[in-house]
Length: 262
Ligand SMILES: NS(=O)(=O)c1ccc(C(=O)N2CCCN(Cc3ccccc3)CC2)cc1
Ligand SMILES: [Zn+2]
Image 1 (cartoon, helix red, strand yellow):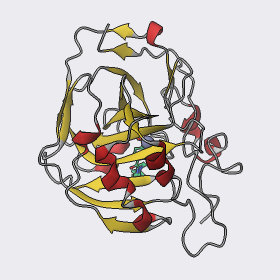
Image 2 (cartoon, protein in one colour; image 1 turned 90 degrees about the vertical axis):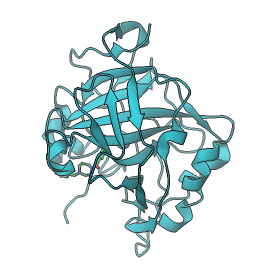
Image 3 (spheres, helix red, strand yellow; image 1 turned 180 degrees about the vertical axis):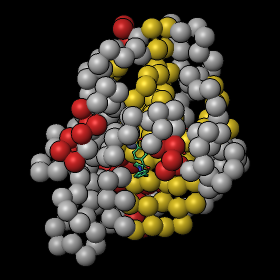
């Protein structure tokens, strides 16, 4: 139960390389996306999201983020197209966010940080037998990143923010059935894509990142509900508000970011 990683002064992103040397690897995430340097690739097909039969199972606070998990025993909810050679199965989605009035996204766009970022995590069930196995393989995961911007309230997000009181503390889980994340998508599926990594330990370099150009919008009130979550467990005396649970941009190290749009 040694020194566990987190987002604090002593255990935050600047320290992770001590326990996870790959933190200084050649394809780490997130990155700062510079649209002017992205290469338009006409061969990128549109991404397709087949979430219609998706089956959410529960919502949980894992001490790092709030996570909605899905049944991933078959191809009922998958992403395909874009840079992907296979279909990838939806496993979970979660968020990263900042303190009140602060940025909290992981990817940035020409240095612009958004209040939050949603990650829809998928794994290559064509080539690998489990999420854990895929998470350790260079083409094992595909994460769809969607920026969140403060604006008009988001009707689809209420189901998630209304469930947060049930998972206030680390290690809490609640039933969360019948949620379809298709409602969280912005109008345009224009995207940037690049080879990267998990943005939390173990930081495996196994992620094909697909980051949407357009944000989804939510109200400041809805964003505030994320900040009612705690990093700590209910039994801990130190109450630590869950916010600023984001890794800052990492060196590009010669990678090319491709764009699906001009
Ligand atoms: N921010 S993100 O890059 O989108 C992101 C995506 C997935 C996870 C995730 O589900 N994790 C982390 C790593 C994988 N482990 C399983 C494991 C497999 C092999 C050896 C140890 C742990 C599950 C927990 C975390 C972050
Ligand atoms: Zn994430």
